[in-house]
Image 1 (cartoon, rainbow, N blue to C red):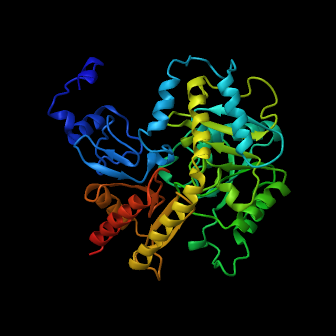
Image 2: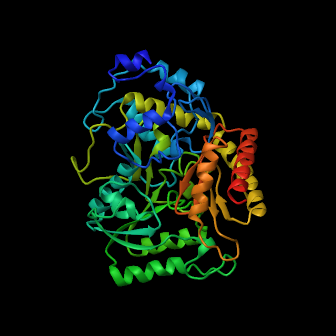
Image 3: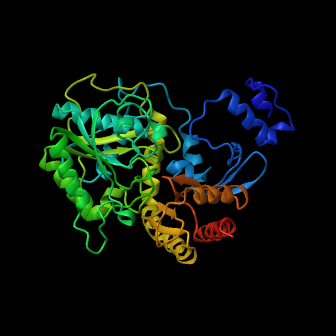
Length: 446
């Protein structure tokens, strides 16, 4: 409290420092709304937290199933990470990495090239967010092809800025009233639970891919790239069938476009492989990376075909993996590999999804459970037979899990709750979370 006072935060007292309602009122007045739901979530205590346990300033402890929307791969205040970070504090930070090179930055670029699929000649561009990584991929594809048209999906989420916003299509609130930066030919994302073409998993003939071919023939075959989330995340946690991803990739190549895999949320080992696209046996031309790669700092990266750009000054940013950030990212990549976290994510993720499927069998309002590794979605419906989306119930369950059962949960799409725990979660904590989630659903459906 004294530190906050010394930094100029006004009217802070021993009483209100532990009062979320008071600070949420101040937030509403002075802080522009982003995606916060201040009716549900209390103010986080920035001085406490360990692993998958987080706290609000009122003193409540939560089991965190969001991990900062896939940012905190190793949870909060992970001791080995804190020790490493302390060892590199005395590092020059202010090197504009797009103007001057440093060894940590070069090493990180090399490492990312090594762990991304494909034996072709690749380069890396380091940036400050997932949306900027997507835009960097798009600019490179336009630079290399001379084309301006992209293939996007519905739903999809690639960010809320510029070119990335043009691709995003998961919620009208994201883009209504904002001009779009590039031409996008859009088709449905492969979604087997609600196939828009009336197919079933058993008799699927990949109509979703054929719809792409038809869209290209109608709207223009001058495509620079297809941009596809390897797993549709914010839009509803859709896991596409491998044959659909392969067919979309092949059609893209048939028309001379690049294939860009958006791995901002699904990458960095979350699915049990470094990149979710590896689950579908497709080698993308570009991978857009963000969130977890920064080890808690704002960072993104692009890995794509050499050369990424035709010359100097085609793309640059003031900040992009400065030395300390590059060092911590390198440490994270090495630690995930050395400590077997990818294998752990595959095994514990399968266990988590199995437990969620048990809830699906138990509750009529859970229509579908889907996911890979530490990335799962639970879709709420009015009943299993009709599959009618139940956004009202989903919202009620989120509020119940947070307020009563102290699970830090997060919505996705219109009627899905996403499970994105940090990799350090234990089987016991998964069981605990399942038990709380089960009770919240029961409360909301009485």
